[in-house]
Image (cartoon, rainbow, N blue to C red):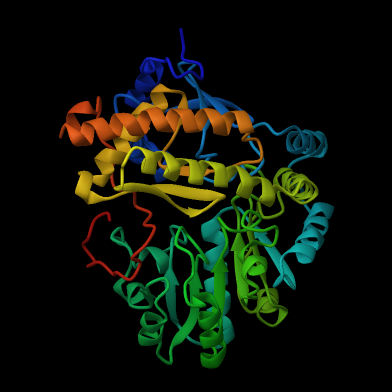
Length: 448
């Protein structure tokens, strides 16, 4: 029988997952479309690899095992799986069509909604992926300033200008690599040292997990204004979650440009570029940023319905409240068990379990926790991405599963049997970093 949500589960049967995986090997490069969803981020031999159904905060894998999901499709599901109001809007629009030969009224209606919510949204453009929007923002910044170099901090997608600063920069011309640089979060001096007269833009995730210290974001905004540099907030994660108006609203900072995608359409593919009109006007004739599917109506219908729900239900408060129980609960359990080598960090709406090397390889610690959480019916990568569908029952159960799993980890550490307790291959270092962005690998580097 497939596993249900239970503390008494055995490790799940994943034979169908493994069969699909074997068919994908050699057919699909890296076997996945998104690294964070791929098998390298799950304990191989224990974790499922393919999901087929989701409802609310729960998912089912191809073998029929059920889990509480704390990844939420790596961010897009702010409301939850198969959320009725959004799905109804999609179905209603589907009756009339998906993509048309001319513009659709939803393009205007959704833009007007966003203008009322996002502080810098004097003008709005749509696309499909976060990388589209961040790359368009960079192009606009270069056109507006007449400069070339970009300073970045965080993860901004797969396009050349950003991947140039990572270790997967093969295939990117050296001339392009020479125009992108990084800086440390919460280190205004590293920003100042990186600036020269040819810096067009500074783009960053306003927060990843660390909180800004010593007015870092405000100092950054002031510095950009002084130097004539375009400030871009990449709000893929913070937008419509941290506050309805994102980090802009939360911190009281209005960047020149901002980008959104996750959370705004509850899983439908859309990205949004917002900005001050003096810059965005260049998208009329000076720069080229157009795509056939930018006005695709199903995603716009989903966006409209999602924003209405996020607003009317005060979803950011729910995410904060439920996430606080998880984060504080994790830390209380670790303290009770005397495990000073692990803690939950970050903001309530998206916290992360961190592990210190003094107890052994952090990736193996994380893997063992993941293994034990999956056994107990919780799909867990160390992150707590909260959705509106996560209930008190989900949270209370998750804290029970965390306590049992942390006890297993504690025992393995004390007996020096961390790797032996792991039943499969540990997770790999994720390409996406969460801190120490001020690095620029050699051109032939591979993976973080």
